[in-house]
Amino acid sequence: MESMKEFALRRFPKLGRWFCADADAGADQAVPSDGLQAFSLGLNKRLAHDAGRRSNLVFSPLSVYAALSLVAAGARDRTLDELLGVLGAPSRDFLAGHVRALAEQALADQSKTGGPRVSFACGVWHDRTMPIRPAYRDAAESFKAVACAVNFRQKPEEAREEINAWVSASTDGLIPSILSRGALSDLTDLVLANAIYFKGKWAKPFAGYLTQHDKFHRLDGTAVDAAFMRGLGSHSIACHDGFKVLQLRYEEGHGPLLPQPPALAPTPAPIYSMCVFLPDARRGLWRLTDKIACNPDFLRKHLPRNSVLVGDFRLPKFKVTFDMTMNDVLQKMGVKEAFELGKADLSDMVEDGGRRKMALEKVIHRAVIEVNEEGTEAAAATCMTRLGCTPDSRPPAPCVDFVADHPFAFFIVEEVSGAILFAGHVLDPTIK
Image 1 (spheres, rainbow, N blue to C red):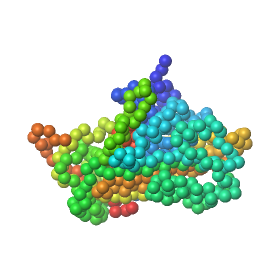
Image 2: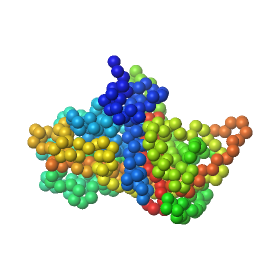
Image 3: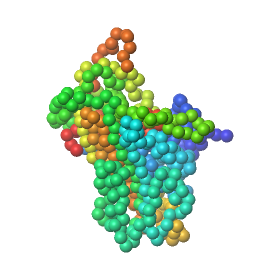
Image 4: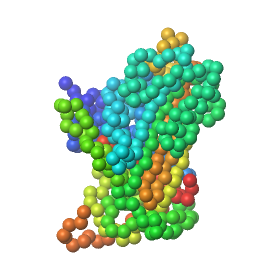
């Protein structure tokens, strides 16, 4: 009997590079992690080149992945095959189980035990004249999603305000709204949305009195005056050919291991960190971004393995807000039929007797991140609308400089699962 990995490679041959041949776990366990990693890094590359060429970028790969997974739960035939191919999963049941596990483990809130505050929420809003199918409701519940009937036909603005209020509450107000006025109409059948919120303190906070202004060199050769956090002592830094990687851990919770069924060992509590990929060349960000996307295991293989003494250490404070309609980017990645009215098969979603055809109308994504001396606060929301129609005793190693005074990429990762919660790049830390 073929393994899950062999099945996925046979069914989706284009995904061959997504799967890790030397995974520590068994092949069946490696597939979803690699699929998520490949999707995350591929999407980062697309956004960096398409939408982020002239601006700072932040988005949540996990948020977009979960939203598309919720679409896959109601898709059939070729529409489903395209979604599974892009998401790197052999079946929608397998995909639902993976997203559910991420929601329960990688996104476990630790704020009550001193760790990061993490929130993940999904919602499905359907017109009350088109109730969702029981099987799809069950699938939505497996995603920890709430299902709500609203009156799109007569009160689309009221429904929009309800969805925006839900997004605001789920992101602690960082994203007050995701749907602008007029985004919904009496033709809207269904809206899917999810939101991720993260707030963590550094395990080793930066001293505010050390923060100083210095020059940050932009891609066009000009420079701006930016506030740089400075570090002393040791930090987790890896030096590679052409780039360096800084890993900043967030303060961990002190609670017990996450519970599991009796037959399984307890799952380690989540460990979060921000990883900064800094090219040696001032204009080397795009080449580094392409290199990162070539291998879904690139991040893990290039993370620091130990701490080193730092010499000149500078990392700019920054706040980035980013929003866009993701239709074009997702279609370039292979999600095509789901956007075509008349071709898309999303018939496993609503009880309409096959009278109305549905397709994805818009995939809207908004994200915010702020990094300062204390830590990080970040949030992201994805919305989809459908219309019918420690040192040892050895001599100290030489000091390593880490001076992020030119464009760099960043990733907020959960280390146990490898999930990338947020990703992006900074071209100018003075622009919010």
